[in-house]
Amino acid sequence: MLSRNKGDGSLRAMFEDGKTAELRGPSARKLFEGLSPTVKLKLDKGKPQRLLVSWQPVGNARQIVALRES
Image (cartoon, rainbow, N blue to C red; front, top):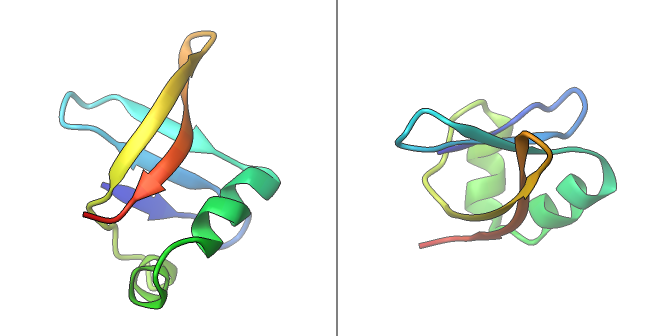
């Protein structure tokens, strides 16, 4: 499930195993802008969306690298 913080534009994905991945700054804005208008509107209204999230490890954290609507 992907959610968005409208205040800073960051994206956060929650996986079935309870772990998370995040992305902030210009990279988060770029991925967000690539989503469909319907998904963007729902995220802006605070409704998490089920998307396919690609991530990579960065230290002890996970960073979102791509989003795809299913």
